[in-house]
Image (cartoon, rainbow, N blue to C red):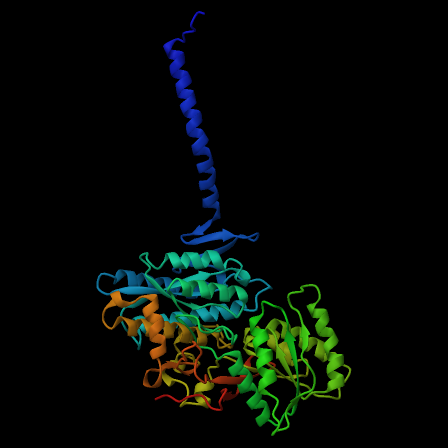
Length: 494
């Protein structure tokens, strides 16, 4: 058989064609992937995720998660840049502030509340770096967004973990968001990777005994006992609990359980008139309808107090239902938990219009220092007063909810732990070392916070933390009624 021979120029063309096809087979998918990455990328460390293309992840302030955060993120970026400029002269580590910064109607936090948190976090960074508490090593403050309802917490947490050994030198994560199952999972993963963690507003009592974790907020048990003590002082004798039974709402579950233990008092005659009335906020189509049935039952029971163990946004619907009750001759008083502070001014004003007196156990209020000057650090509290430093930095932003104070105290706790761990040698500062220092913040070493003097138990909870009793007014603001605590009075400074 005659052998078929190809001219050399044809062979060359065939070879080139084969090589080109092979290269394209590899390059085209890579190019497509690269194009997808570019489209999904919002900024360094921040990517689009989910059906709504939320930008989630970690930034140093160079990326704006929301327009209303622009002013405070700009200041954080400027401070972070100053730290890097001084890096040759002075060492630094990073602290992240993590919560949901891109919000929807599914979130309990409001846009105002998370902005105020970030403003307070920046104040703590400033005080530690070049303010009245200037210490070394300096702190870079990273902003970590987990997305609405913390739906993308795993991506953000992984991004934070990667920052431990990078030039960011991350050692602590603060904030951590409200008490939900997702945020608890995020907390446990961060702790498992050796990062110190400080919660600012996480109050569910069953979140404890996690290595390197503390919280500056009172627990729900402390809130319930402080609230019950207030009611007893005011001679309220009968109560009914209305509670959200959604499985992922750790906040409501522990709050309701704690109050049912704290309020009944054989000596004082206080008692609960019925088992808890429950609704399930996880059933999006029916929970509002469930609340509509409660006023009829409450009119039959006629308690003096209704203890509402649910989120602030649920409370507004409940108050609307209660305003339409048939027993208009009976006056109800409602006592709620700290999530009420997430209500926006108009929601607060609307709540007051319902002709129901509403109190709630808050986390912080700027008038606490004036009411109890020996139990709140005057130096820290001054920054939050009218015409104080925060008013100068962020004018026309009425921080009525106390979230700025709580975030400040959380970041200040991390900063103090870093200072104590360093002892003049920044190489000693690790997440584990910072976490250990939290347990040294006792007695003369307690934290001089703007929400009270803070020391920590071994399980991470604060000791007998100050709990402000607040009321809502028609101007859409909260007013301080008194400062309480689980065991009577909060601790004094030493």
